[in-house]
Each structure stands twice: as structure tokens, then as C-alpha cells.
Length: 282
Ligand SMILES: NC(=O)c1ccc[n+]([C@@H]2O[C@H](COP(=O)([O-])OP(=O)(O)OC[C@H]3O[C@@H](n4cnc5c(N)ncnc54)[C@H](OP(=O)(O)O)[C@@H]3O)[C@@H](O)[C@H]2O)c1
Image 1: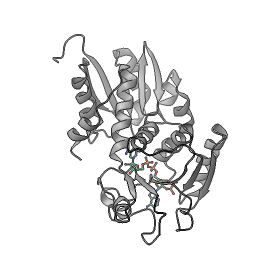
Image 2: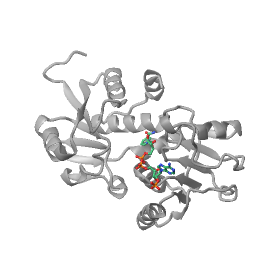
Image 3: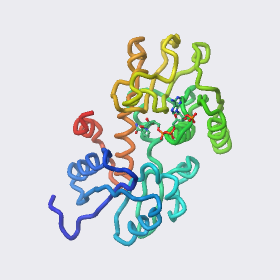
Image 4: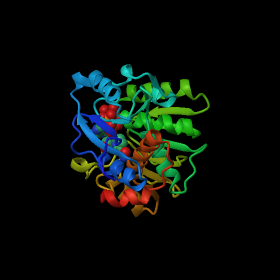
């Protein structure tokens, strides 16, 4: 579809943005679904976030993704923030709805979808989440909203884990939330159904590391998920596969959060996971 006077624009704002996969995904989806839309990236200096959002309104940009370091900083300049994004305290997607900017967070729902797509059931299950940073907040809130039974958050900085746990307890009373240091033993894993890494351990320069001791003996039905997606098979996932455990790769969260953003902007229902997976060539 050729660019014309009617072509709409969506974008990413972040700092830096050069390495983003989002332009590949969204421009592919626009073409695939015949949407007259182009997606581009803007490197926005942290001092210019307010002006960038005013620009989205002024230019009629239909929506935006938001990445590090602006996911929290954009919030005061939005007209509305969806409930779970407000609980998470960060926004990765903005929809320009008739001049009103509405904030969403699709990271957590993207993660949940990646697990459900593999045929797993999360409802009422015990999930252990390693890490309590930005991505963990999105994942933990989405897990609670989805209806898991129990969440154990493990982190080196315990105060961060406790603050996330308290946030979830106060918003989702039916979910049991515990915290512990990032020093998991075989005993700790005894009744855990899903183990989810949200730390950067295993990622590119840290690819020889994993967030748990490799001598741990896991339960035979443990599902191991890693949100790190480069490399595709992290050390943790290799460890799990060697033990015949089911695994969920981080690429699923990456693709599904993007698809969820595209659905929010366009109102379309997108069924293109496999095709997007192929074009990313990760
Ligand atoms: N698949 C996806 O779509 C997707 C989306 C978002 C993020 N991610 C990935 O998720 C990872 C985390 O991102 P983030 O934004 O949440 O980062 P973050 O906010 O910096 O949080 C990092 C977390 O990992 C812990 N951590 C960091 N280095 C550690 C170490 N050496 N040993 C033990 N714990 C350590 C931190 O613990 P302390 O609190 O103790 O410092 C913190 O809990 C990154 O690799 C990112 O690429 C993937």
C-alpha cells in the first residue's frame, strides 16, 4: 500500500530506539491486514517527554509504544490510564482516541498469552517469579489479574519484591503473594507449577548465567518460562529442556505484546503470531 495523504502513523518513543523490533512487527502487520499505517521510531530525550506526547496529539499519530526510559515518565501526561497499567505503574502502549491519550501496558498480557498459547493453564496455579524490576511488575500484575492462586517473588533486593507484593495484595485480595531472596532451593520449588525468569541473567552478555543454581532438582511437571529472548534458548531454558521440562520462550511475550498494541490501535483481532515469528528471524 502506497503512502498517501490518508496514511496514518504509529510510533515508538524511547531512548535509545535503534535496536527495536517494533517497526518490523507493526509495518508487517499493517501490510498483512491491509491497514493504511506506517510505524516509525523516535528517539526522545528524557527532558522532552511532555513535548513528545503533545506532538502525538498535535500530529494525529494514532498510537505509540513506549520503551525504556519513558514507561513511567509518560503517565502524568496521559488523559487516562487503563486499570492494570495504573497498578503496574508503567505504560508501553498509548492510544490516541479522538485527541485523548489513553495508556495501556501490554507486556504482562503478552506474557500470559505466550504461556496459554503453549496449552498451559495458569488459573489457581503457584507461580514463582525471579526478579522484581519493571518487566516483573507487568508480569506479576497480569498473573494476578488472570487468576493465578499463589505468587512467590524472588529478588536480591527484598524491599523491591515486598513493595511489588504489597501492591498486588492490595489490588488482588484473592491472590496469595510471598517474597523470598533470589536463592531458590529444590525445596522451595516443591509445589511450584511455573518458574518465570524476569531478571536479565541469561541475556546476551550474561548468556552463561542463570538465575537459579543448576544443581537444583525441579519437580517433573514444572513449566519454565524465560522472558529473555536473546538468545532464544537461554541457559535456564536449556537447563530445563535437558530435564525434559516444558518451556516457554521470551520471544512469545515480545510478539504478543506487540500484537496486543496493534489490536488496541486498530480495533482488529490479529492472528499472525507464526508469521511475525518468521520475519523476526531471531
Ligand atoms: N520478552 C519481552 O518482551 C521482554 C519485555 C521486557 C523485558 N524483557 C527482558 O527482561 C529483563 C529484565 O528487564 P527489566 O526492564 O525488568 O529490568 P529491571 O527493571 O532493571 O529489573 C531487573 C531485575 O533483575 C534483577 N537483577 C538484575 N541483575 C541481576 C543479577 N546480576 N543478579 C540477580 N538479579 C539481578 C534485579 O534485581 P534487584 O532489584 O535486586 O536489582 C531486578 O529485579 C531484560 O533482560 C529484558 O530484556 C523482555
